[in-house]
Structures are given as C-alpha cells and as structure tokens.
Length: 75
Ligand code: SF4
Image (cartoon, rainbow, N blue to C red; front, side, top):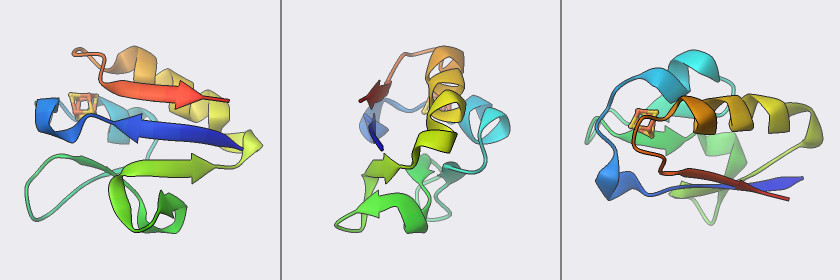
C-alpha cells in the first residue's frame, strides 16, 4: 500500500493525472479539481488515498506528470 495525497487547492485542472492514471485520479464534477477516486479515499477525503501495490507505479507516473508538483506518493 502507498499513501497518495493531492494539494487540491493548487490544482490547475491540467488533466494530466487522470489521463495518465485514471485508476486512481478523477476530475471532481463539483469543483473541477483532481480527486482520488472514491474506492481509494481515506475517510472519504478526495485529497487523500491509500492505493494497492499494483497501482503505485501508476500513482508515481501521475505525480511525475503533474506540472505543479502537488501529488505526493509515500510508501
Ligand atoms: S496533474 Fe496536477 S495540476 Fe494537473 S489535474 Fe492533476 S493534480 Fe491537477
């Protein structure tokens, strides 16, 4: 498992993360910002998730693709 966080207020909705890794990230229809998909959220928080090992590479690719470097993957 790895922890994934998004500094949502800094998101510029560039679409990279949910294009590169739609398994984990999605665009929140309410505010247009990047969110962790419901199934991986911690405490239903769209900015924080726990993802299984087989999705860690996907999360890292998304973090690397983020132009404002606000996605963090730990673990
Ligand atoms: S890659 Fe970064 S800036 Fe772009 S939508 Fe995702 S979190 Fe937002």
